[in-house]
Length: 194
Image (cartoon, one colour):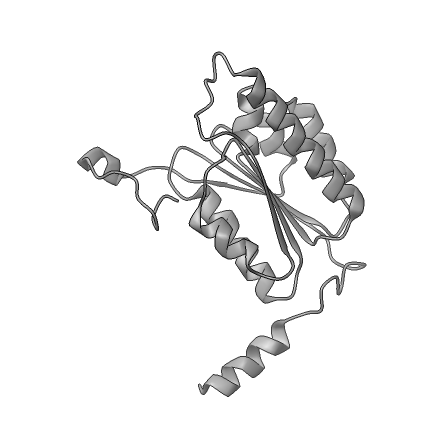
C-alpha cells in the first residue's frame, strides 16, 4: 500500500474531536496486576485515540519524575497531562502527608475534567495503587466513574485494583510477570521503564 493510500485509509477511520459523543457508549478499562506494562498499555490507548481525533486527559498519580512517554504525549495536540506525585516512593504503611495531599489534588483535577466534559478519554494512571494505599477513598473514585459523561472512556491503571473498582469496570486486564530483567541485575533505564 502506498503512503498516500495508507493516509487515506487512516483519514477514513478518523473523527473530528467530539464527533459521535451523543451515540457513543464510553467504557471503563482497568489495567492491573504485578507485571510491567500497565501504564504503557494505557498510553498506547491514548495514542490510538489521538490518532482517531479524540481528546485525551491524563492524570498521573504517585509519579513526579520525567517520563519519556509523557513528554511525547504532551507534545501532541488534544492531549493534556498532569502529574501529582513526588520523586520519592510512597510508603504504603506510613504515607507522607504530602502524598495524601497530592493524591487529593489529582482526584480533584479528575473531577474537574469530568465536569468540564471536553475530553473523550480520561486516564487515571496509578489510581489503583492510590486507593489500595488509602490515599483517597475507593468510593470517590467509583463516584467519579459514574459521574462521567456517557460517552467518555476512562482507564484506571496500577497494581492491586480494589475489588469494587474491578466490579464496576467494563473491561479488566491483568498484567502478570513471567520474567523480568531486574532479576538478571539489569537496572531500569530510559526508553524502557521511563
